[in-house]
Length: 109
Image 1 (cartoon, one colour):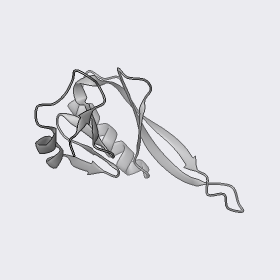
Image 2 (tube, rainbow, N blue to C red):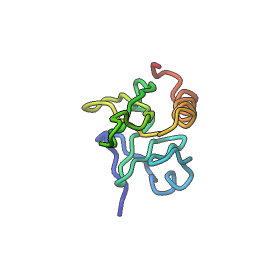
Image 3 (cartoon, one colour):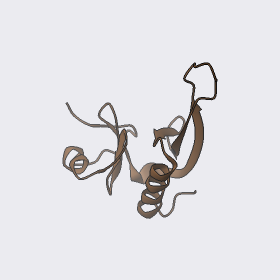
Image 4 (cartoon, one colour):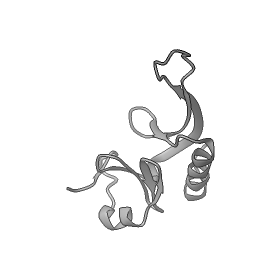
């Protein structure tokens, strides 16, 4: 199964080889050239315009109704809406954001 860019016209020459070198941050992986998503899609880092942390809660539908706290990194690009990358813990979200900041210095935070 082949990898597909979510930004048409910005395909990488060898996404399979690049994905093999990517660092895992939970469900997504980040290489020096792209963010790899579950489902064989990727976002080339040249498309990243902004990245920021986002805190939320997963509703467990339990008796207390508090939910489980989780952290996301929202990545804005030239597409529809932001990518919502689940990092679960704040430390992992901050590490993902730091990696994106290092690889995409022109992106807003």
